Every structure is written in C-alpha cells, then in structure tokens.
Length: 266
Image (tube, rainbow, N blue to C red; front, side):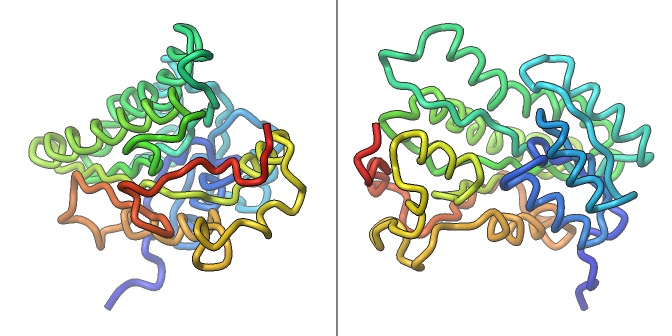
C-alpha cells in the first residue's frame, strides 16, 4: 500500500520555484511530506511561497548563471535540513531568439542557465544523492526535439539537457545508485508565458482562445499538471527507472510542433 505522503521526510531542491512550474512542484512536494529548498531570482515571490509553506521550506536567491550557485544551493540545503534526496532542475531562461539574434554572449547565457547549471548542481549534490540513493528530475521541453523558429538557443539548451539526462541516467544509476529522469512539458500556462504572449501583442484572454489543434483538452497544460506527474519521479515508486525522458504534451511531439504565434503578435 502506498504511503499517503509519497515524499515523506525527503529533502528536495527545486530550482526556479518562486513561480510557475517550479512553484507548483515545490507546493505539491511539501503537501506530500517533503522539505524543500525554494530557489529563484524573485525574492518577494519566493518569500511569499516560503511564508505559505512554513518550516518545511527555506529560500535561496541566486542566479544560476553564476557557476558558484549550485554549490551554494547544496550547502544551504544540507545546512538547513541535514541531507539531500532529490534535485529538480526546473529553472530555465525561456529566451526568444533566432539565427539572426543569437550571438555568442546570448547563447552562452542561455546555455549557462539551462544546461550548465543543471550539470553543476548534480555534480555538487552527487555525494548526498549517492548516500541516500536519491534522484534527479530535469524539467525539459518538447522543444528539445527540434524547437520553434523563435526559440533557437532555448531549444538547443533543452536538447543538451535531454542528452545529459540519458547519459547520467545510465552512468549515475549504475555507479552511484542515483537515478536521473526528465519530463518534457508541452505548452504550459505559466505567469511568464501569459506575460510573454501579451507582450507579443496578443489579447489578455489569449489562453481562452487557443485553437483545439493546440489544446484538444480545451485548456493549456497547467503548472499543477506537471507537478502531479513530478511526484512519481521524485518518489520511491520510480526507483527502478533511470534515463527516461517523458513527454507531457497534448499531442504527439515528433512532426507536430508548429509556431504558436496564433494571434498575429509580433
């Protein structure tokens, strides 16, 4: 029989958890019995999350583009909770660019946040994860497979993350007992996605007018939907599985990822 609290006493780092998918994962993890290090850049938002969730959480504000950030996150987590069982690499810079706008500095920052930081965080936490037979869950994107025209650097970073998941999912499971898996969400209605669509010139109620071709369910995927799925991968129920990448989308990914500029925004 499954425990009613599927993450009881586990200690989890969730990057990018002051809002969006990361916040939803952090909140759900606490409800399932975990203690969570909330991380992000938005101090005010993070303080609200921690205030809501109480003593089961701590907050660390630091930019993952800084290569020292992963070490700090692990140190702060172990100092606060005494151990580390799981890392959720959720934070990402959803940066719009194409071949004309992706210069070296832009590309390097996208890769530093979206691909290098997850690698460095796993490396920093590996001793703890190995000791406790822990796990890593990477939050990718269906854009890892090819990407949209206006998400070149972002899509490349998610492709790199997916390759890292399969590589480390094999090696770390065999050598350290640490499993590494990934979910690739489709189109998710986060605060930042809504803001970006409006900035592109789309109406404020754009998410209510998404054609059925993009949202057969009648609504976009919500952050809580991703959080619900994440619990399985963070918990002991998934212990035999490693190196798996799972799409969480409303339609088949390969061969079906047209532009989402559906309202004529710039």
